[in-house]
Length: 74
Image 1 (tube, rainbow, N blue to C red):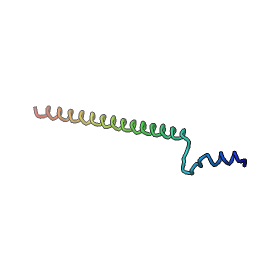
Image 2 (image 1 turned 180 degrees about the vertical axis):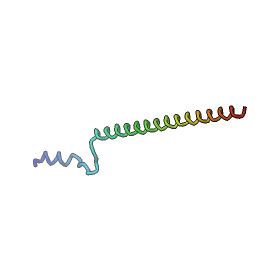
Image 3 (image 1 turned 135 degrees about the vertical axis):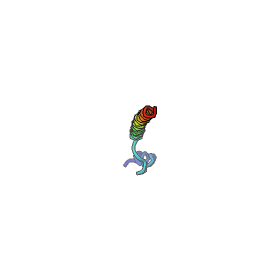
Image 4 (image 1 turned 60 degrees about the horizontal axis):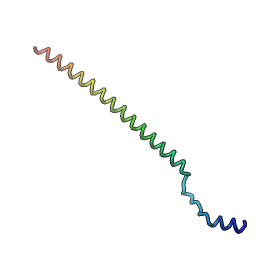
């Protein structure tokens, strides 16, 4: 190496092995996290809709039972 190359080599800090990937990969990770959060939110919304539908069915069954019993006694 030339003295200039030696000087440049010493001036640049070594990259530690744990330094990790370039920032672009961090952005990919962020969008992956956002996609994961969106997927979880959609899954929760589907669960909520399923519970609401089940509750509507239950209310309808209770109403029908109540009506059939009220007709029986009068």
